[in-house]
Image 1 (cartoon, rainbow, N blue to C red):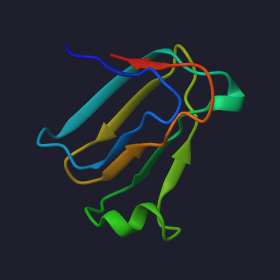
Image 2 (spheres, rainbow, N blue to C red):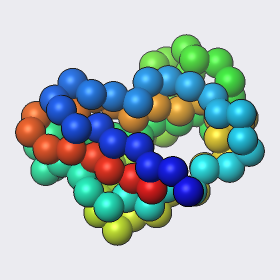
Image 3 (cartoon, one colour):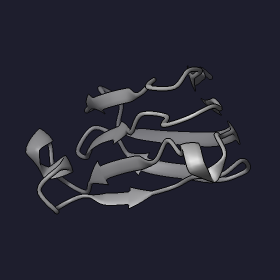
Image 4 (cartoon, rainbow, N blue to C red):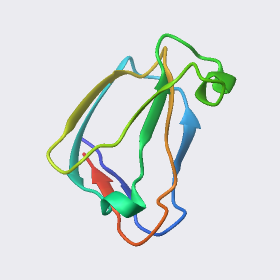
Length: 90
């Protein structure tokens, strides 16, 4: 098991496609609603442009949420934290 953390304003987990087929993230900490770090993904697309052309989905996750994603065939990213707070996921 590994974890990822966005700790400061402006931190992001940039657009990418993973080598492994699936990602299961358990959100343990998130910024306040005013400083969200939302997840966006383009289902069944490896085109990075699909994250910004209206083809993607966006969700704001909260502590205790679980996200299961097909990570090798869906380009995805966590948008930057826009204020104080941090986002930690396992």
